[in-house]
Every structure is written in C-alpha cells, then in structure tokens.
Image (cartoon, rainbow, N blue to C red; front, side, top):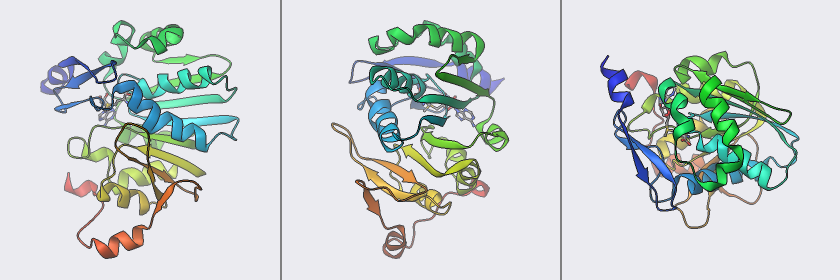
Length: 254
Ligand SMILES: C[S@@+](CC[C@H](N)C(=O)[O-])C[C@H]1O[C@@H](n2cnc3c(N)ncnc32)[C@H](O)[C@@H]1O
C-alpha cells in the first residue's frame, strides 16, 4: 500500500543539541525541530512547563500527541526521576505507526535515557509499560478515532503532531473539541505552534492562551483551561479585532 511504504521511509537526522531525530518522508518533515534539538525541545517546550504548572498534583494523566520516537514520554520520566519527584504518571499516547514504535529499542537515544532503557524496550515490545509510579499506553491507530474513546480525564496534553500544514486534522477546532471533552477543568496544553489559527482553535474550546519563553529557543504556546500566573497572557478577543482574517482550522477543509 502506498501509505505503508512511504510511512516506512525515514532517515535519521542529528539535531543541533546532539540528539537524534527522524525525517518522515510521508509527512515531508522532521519529527523535531533540528535547530532546537529533540531532547532540548521536548524538555523545554513540553515537559518542564507542564510539570512546573502542575507541581501540586500527586497524580497526572498525560495525553502525548503523538508518540513518534517517544521523546516527550521518555523526557517526562527522565525529568521526574532526575528531580526525585514521587508524582504518579499515566501517559496515553496515540500513534498509528506501529512499525516505528516496535523499532524503538534499536534507536540511538541520548545518554539521558540510559536509565530508562528497560522501559523503552518494554514499550517497543508490548506497546505498554507499568510499574508502581508510571503507566504508559500506546493507543495504536488514528488519534482522531482513539481520543473520543479515552475514559480517563486528562491533566496535561503535549500537542506535538507534525505541523498544521502537513497534518491538519490534528489541529482543527473539531480535534481540539474532542481533546477538550476529555480534559480535567484545570488541564494544560503545551505546543510548539504559535500560529493564530491554532491558538484560535484552542480558544474556541475554552483554552486561555499564554506565551512560553524558554532559554535558547523560539517561544512556544501554553494553553490552559484556568488562568495561570507568571506567564504572558494573550488576549484573543483583541487578537480577533486586530486580525479579522484569522480563523481556526476546520475538519471540512481537509
Ligand atoms: C512530530 S511526530 C511526534 C514526535 C514525538 N512527540 C516525539 O517526541 O518523538 C508525529 C507523530 O504523529 C504520528 N501521527 C500522525 N498522524 C497521526 C494520526 N492521525 N493518528 C496517530 N498518529 C499519527 C506520526 O506517525 C508521528 O509518529
């Protein structure tokens, strides 16, 4: 099948932070910003802001969109272990590329993941992992189908799909509506996208929008269902007045 063949075609790319990512021929895009670096991007744009703003919670349920090389999931475990946190974490991660996940035990990850190699191996073999502190489940198949079936209520969403231009159906207003439906009332979403169309799609589903500035990388977006202190808030009503052309993305257009 065309898609299966193309999906299998990937090449390893070395990022500027010294960590490896892949280039997808199917989506004509790397899995991570090669400039920001796979591990650096994962930690700075997703894991740190998400865990800092939820630090009072003893249990977290995380929706990792989508699993790919698993950097966001593995960096979450790395960060929690490094900080000696006792937070219990359940990660649900849709992914339709089973072959990729099953190959991850052979991927050349950074030394930071050395201590969790056994977890990477288990996920690669069984598509899930569980111990006293961590539970990780890969939801095989199309994220648009698996998300509405999730029964758990979500604290954190790592919105890390391929770009809106190359994977639009994981960025539409309807997609964010499905994500919103499984969120806790104080859920938080992290994403590299700062596009007005994406922020509008989130805002139209009750998310407040904030700018996140990390060191040595381009700013990114944190969206939250409740007001956050210490982050630069974006007044989306004002944005709409100033940019009347901006519209959220819609399923019907793709
Ligand atoms: C940018 S990569 C994710 C990178 C990942 N967060 C990481 O740290 O390695 C996007 C992933 O989404 C998967 N994907 C794309 N569309 C999908 C869909 N509709 N359902 C499930 N997985 C999808 C791709 O196979 C790819 O692995």
